[in-house]
Length: 267
Image (cartoon, rainbow, N blue to C red; front, top):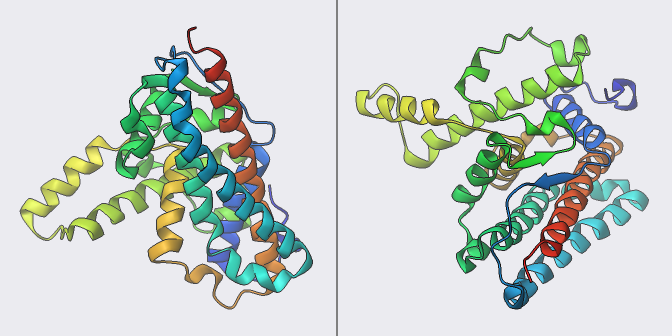
């Protein structure tokens, strides 16, 4: 687990996010993925991924260029960490679109809606046709994770195991997903019909590591980014570096999976 003494800030929200980033960085080290589905794409259609591949390369370069700046100018991290989770999500999203295109052969995969992409790959994890080498990232949670018992402040005071910490992350993701649903559709649970819609959504929930990246993009793109307000540059630099490590590990994992699937395209 991340060693708190490295961080000077006592802000619980910031330190909590840092613990999340550190866990993902450590647990994704050397991560790989496999897929049991047979690619349906025809080899002569591979040229259609060129534009998407360029987007991935540019996004990855942008992320890595910012890391180099952060290493030398720590103050730069105070602004750049607002963009890193957003760029990381798009990096993952574009990779997943290409992987789905290879699997299905459908050109619509390359412009898949965000609201369809994440649930699709969460379902593949649930169905075990997509598998990460680290079992932690194969976990797919439903609404029952809301019953996951927690102790106030345990993440920072009690140093729980990585598995328990990951459970706390997933519980937070589920809560955020429900909250996002209510915000987007303007649902008020004091209204009987709205309450029924929220309950139906809650009952259908299925969340995975892909939801974490998506919801971090929403958090920093639109709201709730105040956990980095007034944080010293030395601390935001640490956060940037840990989140970047997680981003890089997942990028490499999905990049290798894509390449493996390409080799399996029938001649």
